[in-house]
Length: 634
Ligand SMILES: [Zn+2]
Image (cartoon, rainbow, N blue to C red; front, side, top):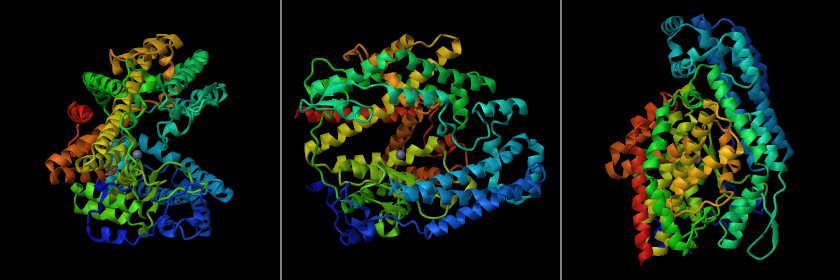
């Protein structure tokens, strides 16, 4: 059924065109050829054909050796300029080659040609990175004076200033060449361009292997059938409406992890030891400082996140009590946290309606943003690959390369969640689009720390819009509970993970042996404190630390919490302050990587070293709790 809140709102061209879109019923088992072409993306702005792609790849490979001519010569301004010109041209070409291969493969997963193209594009990118390693190494060792001389002698170098500044920011962490050589062999490289998390450490590999080898037990499903539990179906059983099923799933998973606790503790302790060793090798006091410095983030952001969320834990306790009451339970456990407490509403949101709704919900971001959004959401423009089909990758993402329009990959199946995902992905896409239009190539790619702000701001504005329009109390309750869950899992839970990560790295830094018992106790303690006195921690719940792969990502999880916090705070500012707040936000997006991330974010009115933005997100949580409590009384 189509709910009244999704009635089309006439917004210029788009609303009129919506009627022209061919009707289509998504079917994830259908062949790609059954989907009307209008709902598939157009890869021709990247390459006209696979042959054109291959020719570009061959040309790239032929040009890479040209970089060698500059090795050892970057102290000369003209050579530096010419070398960076060539490097960034090849870098852009390599990005075209990898993006085309990846997008092509994402809709043809078992196509051998597509898979081989991905491998070939990665090999080309790798070759470029190897050939260009001397650039980053030499730039790090240039003196400030010689670089300033180079800027005056070669005004064209100005285009590379933010890139060079960021590269040289940690120049004082550079060790003598022999020491750097040894660290690079061990996998720590100060001038690596790719994120170190893309290459798993031997400890992470061991952890993954261990989880693959663990014989997961059978549980009884809702129909009374025996089913084999695994890491993929666990989240579904954990959220089962049948309490016996979800209780057994959680107990079985954690009980099984318990049997391997010493091996699992050894891999995590080994990873954290490695994190601390690398940090110390470069003269940092803590791993936290070292890994935040990589993205130029002040550790005060981390401390502020943990302390402000801790100060607001009574709100999470209130939510736990609300869940208990809504579910009619006397006691509440980990396995009661994932079941929906609002009746699911059967809302059918065809793409045409979603598009109209998203455009209306994001209207507060201004006409220019709206125009770019309308362009991307018009499927005739080729940004979108909308519907699921056989052999298509799952999930959703946005990807872009400097120049052509961004791409948005969806598995749209007409649900309310899908509409929200669409708004989320368009946040990413337009962030790239705005940065691309405003910045030169070397300064366009925003850092991961900023990535989830534009996307969650869009989701938040959409959620507000839908709640305000909702007339049916059941629908309103559903939307509000979704918001509570998003904040619980993304702000509270990720902050709990962040706190765990900081505490356990702290044990390593103090020389306290990290045993399975210590990890268990630390995690149980956090669970009890976060979920409150009315929450029951079961025997093996402390083993959840062994279920979270993110602890191997070197201080990464906190950025999920800061991302959503900033997104909510900005949506709030846009709603209450209007145009000036929207303009400041768009300027942040257009800033790309032209300035340090915290500086860009401060421009949008969010200072993450202070509690304000976090408090704003917590007030949103509190207000939502009030609304849900009121609806429940009725
Ligand atoms: Zn995202």
